[in-house]
Length: 269
Length: 365
Image (tube, rainbow over all chains, first blue to last red; front, side, top):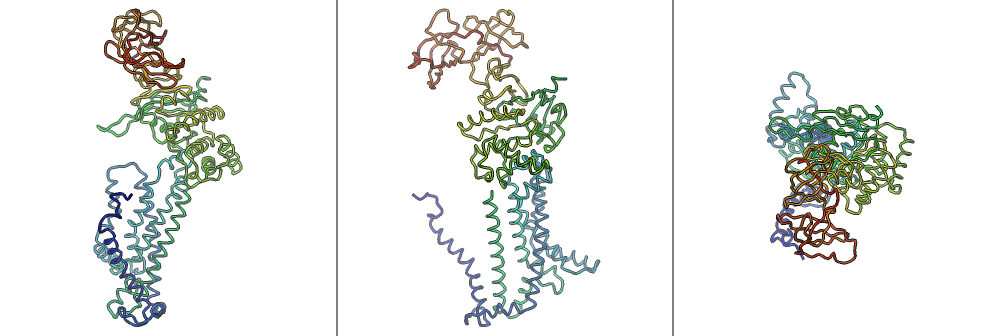
């Protein structure tokens, strides 16, 4: 017998669900399909071809922007995850005290503050620093990306820490492990899936960012998203579709890798 | 000097207060305990009595706000847990889920930096001690609760602690397994000769396993003694009430003669009662009588107590009988079913009660 409140027997549920999936995935599906269009239009099918992938591959601007994007995302994600790990340990492995809740919200604030505000603020700050120091390299972009990636890395790590049995760390200390060894042999191995999740999330968020990047970047520092935005001002060709499709595959690959990594970790528990 | 060396743990005037100002909570106050070498010592009390707090202070997971804790004469109270030669068996075992059984057991020795060869030998010894040799390379999540319990015990014993602390280790096991592990723990303690400090709220478990028991309530030690002393000679009402079933009666002291004192019950009859040495009984007192020290008989004029049977509960090995006394209070009797067949009384029967010699004891209130 079906349970009375089983969501599957609620009237209209299936319809609404299908509609949601439709709205979510049809645009992506269309985008991927037209990436293989042999014509120049993104709306009229003229036959199958890889021509736009080849075009993107031979476009130096695209390749440079892609490399820059991955560079920034990789460095920013690693730094953000390291900082987030320390922050998560500091905020969970302590007796509650007044101001702790404030710290939580302080760490997570970048999630709440409109991105455009952060972007303008950083633009003003960095332009001052540029004038003082004369430095105009990728450092600004990396710093900005690190900053907004921290809360994304922090959340899964903190969740993992909060679910961890504190008695494990106590038991290790009881068995003569110094605080550093407790972290090295107990906390870190058990926290690893959380750290990986944080890292992946931060990487994808950074890869995807456009608002802050657009404001902070110096001349010639296009990332893939800002390059694509720039192209939209001119004629749109299926090249954009091709780049987006590669992007999509990349994030799918990352998610899949993470899924298997975390699953093999769960199994070992 | 010699006597001092025999003490494994001395708890001296230890207190633990949480918070400050108006929200202050006293978890432990002015605790004194001497725990002897090789002793199976139990901290017994209801939840919230401070027994686990005291264990945590000895383990080093928490620090006292007053007093000192001596381990073989050395104050360990200010040391962090990893500098104390004591190990703990945790309530939910706290086995490391990412390690094998052998890695768990060897963890303490590895942290102490012992050579590989020694660790392997010791792990084998420990596996043999708890009969877990076949599980050596299993992950700890792949073994049963009872087996996890054994691994936790082996892990805590592997570094040869001077004192082993056990925090309600049997509470997660089902009844049969618990009984089995009680015997196991006693055997392991005898084989290793390590001092055990065992925390439990289960009085049966405490009586069955301990050399001595400290009964605690509200952050204080109420009585320390061998299981029979705690049970038969409770020092005060709380102890008598917490351990086993008890009947309380009020009485007036008539005369004192050595360790015996003559008291008069509310129905006018008199009987002899013992009293604790630190008490001078006078005036109105409470006396305690265990249900198994009372016999049921047909009504007779000279009986100390009489009443009417309220109900009977047949429990296989014995029968619980509740008798309604003339002053309307209920008196519990436990009678062993030594004869085959029904016990010969029914609810509503008038009966008289006789009390075994020396069974009545006067309590400190």
